[in-house]
Length: 296
Image 1 (tube, one colour):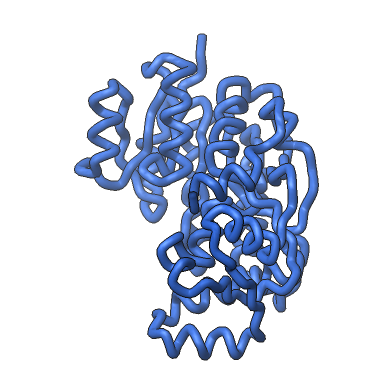
Image 2 (cartoon, rainbow, N blue to C red; image 1 turned 90 degrees about the vertical axis):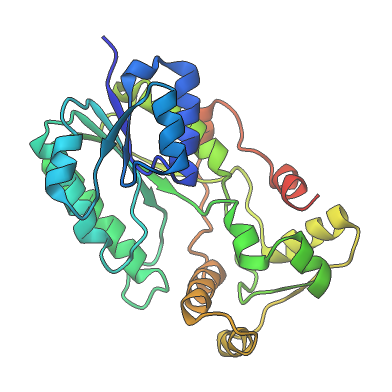
């Protein structure tokens, strides 16, 4: 008898990739998605594919407990609200416990600095709390600590049109290394785990890209791809924020750019492990190829 799998975050980038891969590898009768909005276009597509739709919200424990009934394996995608994340995640774990879910896969994050002064302090604390909630629940777990998505690169430096205009990557990331991972690689590995969860029972896996890279190297690679010289400038944080404010970026966007840039500069994403390669059975997609697809 196959496990009944429920995927949260099913209308997001990672969750939708997971669902599409699962459709290729198991019967749709084994799949369930959790969504907040029945009218979402992806939700309609899932419904047309015969995938069971369940409505729930991390902020509503009662809706979650109902949605998790009969579920064997829960793919738990972390929420996006730093301030409320820990409580929302506790709701998910409490509901999973109440519904007798057998196995939780949780998308956590990598970190090094656990102090309150870390630029990632709020993010790290919420993930640490969630991991504790899951372990304390008694539910079998697999914790998946993700490095930065490769897709974040474009968010941080702009798309091809913007780079052709500015000819500059302007970001206070210094010489910090990151082990960027394309979402497709994460999705493929995590589908492998979802289809054979017992092999990863009560394990913490660190999912990093096979190679590390700096933004100076990214600038050099993009220069080759678009055949235009792209310079890399790493200003001080105050100067960066002042310039972004001058350009009219919203304060919350400036805060996100600053937070992740500073974390990169301080080596928070400078991690090496072969966990992801082991689960995939291969190296992760090269950043050269990823950048060619993104900026070519």
